[in-house]
Image 1 (cartoon, rainbow, N blue to C red):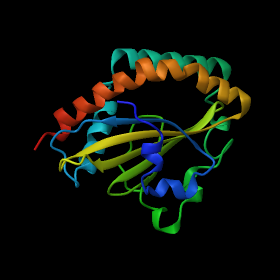
Image 2: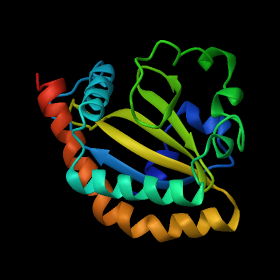
Image 3: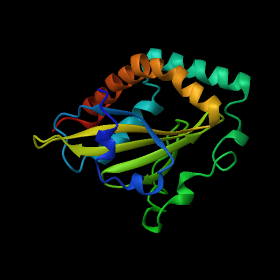
Length: 196
């Protein structure tokens, strides 16, 4: 379920310390029935396993394949447009206590790069010719003794082209991609994380 950007901004996340130049683009919350305060690593492992197994919904696989094909055609995703070339990695901004937290995270086959990992939040990033984006995952109490997952997309578009790109893909993200990912991520919790 999509929720307002203020829901992310109101929390004392570490990500706020070093991303003042990024905009909160989307915030989504995911149901994880039976989850407790220590289950964030279980949820992250379930998400990695679901992605690595190719379990994305067909519509998401199609949209991503189309995006990568268009990107290849126009040179949006070449190494020179990514992290360490067009933009510096967010890891270069990390406070000392966060600098090595993602080093031992098991790799995932998705295109994102780990930035940091804590007990209740994690950040991953991706950069190309269109945008520098951060996927911020967080673990919050629901108020009834359980916990749920929240995913926030923070973006820094690459000039006018990047802003037009983000505006152009917004309907696809909101109407197709995120609802399909919601079903997949909630299923990943039920099937891999388990309900206690």
